[in-house]
Image (cartoon, rainbow, N blue to C red):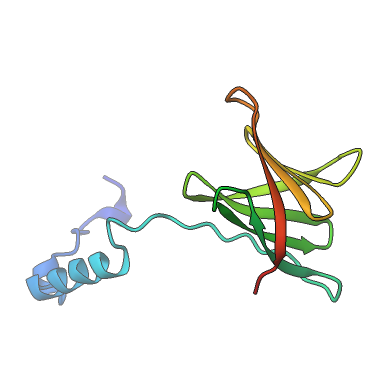
Length: 137
């Protein structure tokens, strides 16, 4: 045994101020601070300059169906956030010959003027056409 370890004993929780009350209080705090059912969240900071903006737009997609899209234009980052199957998805702007084209996985959101289309590229290329109902807020 090394000389520095001679006489060393691991701390005894019962004699170092550690009690069952302390343990239970710590456990209770952990359950409150970190609930088991909470979904993890990710936050990615984007630099916002004077020319950056966040623009919510409501679209009418026919048959009483509406779609709210939030456009985020922050410097070099142009994003569109829209729900897909009840989950908010972040779409990233990519090169387009005309209009603004955004993609997220197998989904494509393409807007030009008041018109936009949503396409599921993996599922038979089904396309939904939408028209801007004006700017939301």
